Structure formats: structure tokens, C-alpha cells
Amino acid sequence: MFLVIAITSMTACSTPTDVSAVSAETELQLKIDRIVDAAVVQGFAGQVVVAGVDRVLYQRQAGYSDSAKKVPVKADTLFHVASISKYFTAILVVKSAEEGKIDLDDNIASWVPDTELAKRDITFRQLLHHQSGLGSSYAAENAVTAKKALDVLDGQTVDEEKRGRFKYSNDGYNLLAIILERIYGKPYEVLLSEKIKKPAGLKNIKGWSEVDKTDPRKVGQPLQPLPEKLLKRNYGMIGSAGIFTTADDLVRLQKALRNGKILSEQSLESLWRPTEQISIGRATAGGFLRRSEIKGLVFSARGNEDWGDNAILNYYHDHDFYVAVVTSKGPAEDTGQPPFCSSMSQAIEKILPTSN
Image (cartoon, rainbow, N blue to C red; front, side, top):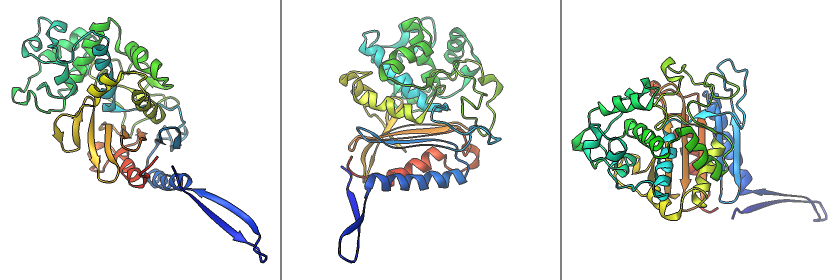
């Protein structure tokens, strides 16, 4: 519960004439405002949401969606959340296991027969946790059909020394998207809507093929234009990096998961189960777990593209706080500066209360 600080002024006869209560929640909002204001000066354009277990504590959209500064960012402006898309794909895979379609420890061979990948004894769990030996070739970015994408992914080198160990893999998550479409006989975007968007009550979430990525009235425009080959639907983006959404819906997603609206408790345990320790925490399916000395256990999903889009979703397990930051305005990876999602979320984390 937030503390309340009362400020009282007295008249000459000691009768209260002005009593105002300034809550810690208001103070928190003012502090976050200063963080956002400082980022805007540096070029930030995007959305920030901070929520507690039962309410939104802070929500703001700032800056302009377009480089000409004519289209302000709105609450429903969509942002490309890059590798946070892997979290959505992981949820879909775990959901398919919950529904009895697969077992997470199954070999994927029966879903990709007559491929070299089928001979590798790769499991769904290994793909989810970046332990398959596949890497990030980006080869599927040129593939507009699932068959072509599978062909090019099948030709990529599998690092056998990394089997069972962490090796970050876009290819692995793109492969999962192809298999999900085979499991259900539906496009990835339909699964996204049926299995996540509708049960979670999300308002603004789109797959890679469902938005006009060049329209600033709908989508935050990046610092650098997207490569032409990526504008169309392609299997290099669908499963690993292709979702557009808002900061508000990222928070809504995590709350829906916590409240059992998408996955059962057992399935949620599989989704969040930590594996190998890496530099930013212990890897989970589509995210990472780390421990903050002050804020305790933190789940984090994050994404960053070299044309400027970056996003972060942090869930503070021990205190039931949720923080989401999304932007399209970098800094781009090649500047050497930390992305806004990292610097802003870190600053917000430091000022979050230790109780909700």
C-alpha cells in the first residue's frame, strides 16, 4: 500500500485552512515523468506503462511517430517489439502442449519429415530455450512461403557443441512458427489472435503481415527505413521478431498470464522455467529471469532492432509490478548508445516501491 504524506497549513488561530494529501503514487508518477522527459529530449518517441497488481500507476505516450514531427504518438500507436515476439511464440508453443498437440520434450522430426533437421533429435524445449544448436542466419527473411523458409532453415549449420547449451537463435523461433502453422493448420497471425489476443483481452496486437509498416498514423516509424525485403510477410520475422503492439497490451499480456487467462498454472511454470545462466539472467522460453538486489525476481522480455525499434517488458514477481517501454526511435544499435527501453526501464526500476 502506498504511503500518504499530509501537508497542513494553519491560520493564526490554528484552524486548518488548507489540507492537501500527496500520495507516494503521485510522487512516483512525477519521478517517471522526469525520466520520460529526459528521454524525449534525447529523441525518445514511444509509450511507457507502469502497473501494479490492481491498477495502472503510470501511462504516457510521448514524442512523434514520424520523423517530420507531425504525427504524435498515441495510446494505440503500434510499435514493433522485435524479439519480444519470441515470448508470444513461446506462449503459443506451450499452449499447444497444454492442448495435447505436442509434448515439449518431443523430437520435432514428425513435423518436419524428410529434412536434415529431423535427423538432429531437436526437441521443442531445446528450441524454446535456445539450446538446439541453431543460430541466427536471418536466411528465412527472403522466404514468403513456409516451404521455402523450411528449406533455407534446413540448410543452416547446427552447432553440435551448443546442443543443450544456450545459443541465441532467431532461426529456432522461425522454425517454431512454421511448425505451429502445421500443428494447427492455420496462419501464425490467426493463432496469435485465437490463442493470445482474445483470451487476454488485448486491444492492439498485430502480426507482421497485418499492418502498414510505413503509415505513421498507425505504426511508430523507425530511425532508419526498414529494408525493402522485410516489408512483406516473410518467415524471417513471423516467429522471432514480427509482432506490433503497445506498451499497454504488453502489460495486459503479462497480467493475463499471471491470472491464468491464457495458460494453466502448470503450463505457466513451463513457460517461465529458468535454464542456463547468461549475462542478462537465466534464459526462459522467450525471455529471461534475473534477480534484483532491491526488487527481487524479475522476468524480462526484450527486443532491439538495428534500425531503431526497441522494447522491454519487465514483471517484478515479488512485488507484482509491471513495466513496459516501447519505441521506434532508437538509438539504433550502431550508435553504441544503450537503447531507450533499457536505460528508461532501469531508471524506473530504481524508483519502484518495494510494496504494491
